[in-house]
Image (cartoon, rainbow, N blue to C red; front, top):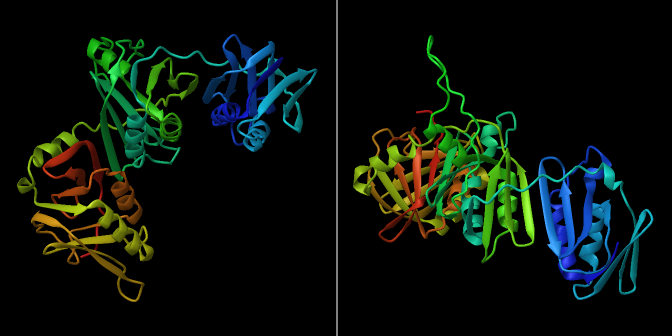
Length: 411
């Protein structure tokens, strides 16, 4: 192997591949980045049996070849090289020589024959603008769980219906749903058979055509992977997404990243959000609707949260045309702030003079995810889930819905 390329694109390519490197590789070769020459340049890849990242960069190829070197070391070296410098790579025996100007590095190689075969990329199911995908994913993942003993709650469900893609995530205490418009390709993978509970004496008729179609259109993606991948591929360009055989990939020209899908059943939520949207077609139909400016609300929550905790929630109470945000009581530290609000209706089950109390972190996460100037809180009770929607003028942002469970206060 012998080639020449520019340091800037090379560093970007190495950084993209390095995202798939495991923190603690179970075997040394999984900590490596695979370098392979091709007719269209230099190809780089990293794969740890869970996540796979591949990329391509333009290069002048003198001699073809393949090499496997430490990914972390190569990434650290590439970051330090001048962006405009030319980089020469040459494989000499069991060493990879890297030269950039007066800098010269000699890297030991790892056995290429021990590196696992890269998974085949599935056919593209849909394309979507990179920035739109990154924004939507960022809104959904705030509600994803981190408890890996409950794998279904650590993922984001992606459901394709026509030209609408629905992203949903929950950790049992909050539920975020975001919809966005995509361009389906018309290609769907073969669905896995659906296992249904049978009544006693009932014969197994197998999955229906409707169930198979729904299974082909729905996948559960690890939330951490999806957030990192969408952020890395963001931009004013289309992102292609495909899934099949338990794998999903996101790609733009020259770059692909993929992972294994979660094999778990995501909680059904269609009966939650439509129910609330029917309850609240207008603000007057709610027991209490509170509209607040998002930036002021988030700033107040962050200030008051300094004395709050999981066991000492933030309390919200409507007081005329203001919303009282407070936390703490008794001899403990206390904080209070007020923000302007518009409210319609009132609750009959207020506790300790407040309309609702929330985990401070969960409330802040929700407000950060709302991209409209205002947020609208729909409440039916101080102890029942609160539906939070973005709001801008006469328009209620229905593309993003956040269901947040309040904390029950002692009366």
